[in-house]
Length: 211
Image 1 (cartoon, rainbow, N blue to C red):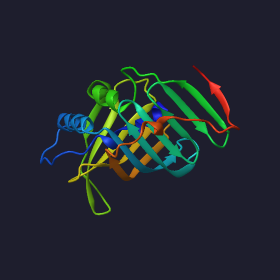
Image 2 (cartoon, rainbow, N blue to C red):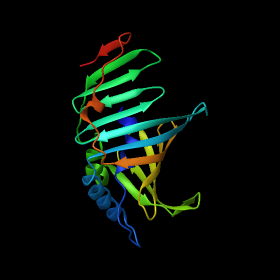
Image 3 (cartoon, rainbow, N blue to C red):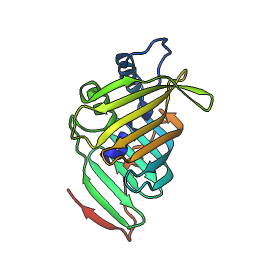
């Protein structure tokens, strides 16, 4: 779940005022400031995975809903991941199974709060050349973990210039698997209900409690 959230964590953190010249420090500070203004958010996204060894590629769509503090719901056709800040549910409709565990957070956690707080100390960050896709201009940020034991090898974040909204995140892991998330739509501060982050498994579901 942590790795899955990493690829999406930036979706709600980069929308800020225009500035002519950018530094990594500027962007980090603006990310933190923007996140402070968000109470809840919902996004539609597509995910494309290119496996490093087999070269097999997969694409599917999903939705991500978040609410402060520490509530997340990620849904796709393959799996539903939910946490209310204390319990985590990982539900597989294909396997008719749900894994239940405690939500754990520490300085290495990949929640938006912890990611932004620890970004300068956990990542080497560089600004790449401006990128142009579909007649839109993007600022491109590259992050490389300082921990050489990290599962993530590198990450790129495309930020739309002008609106300053993240539109794409690309992650390469130690297996050279490349996972790309593209944001189709984002809605902020729509008063998402707490009940969104509760989960009751269907009657025919096997419950595996890891707590």
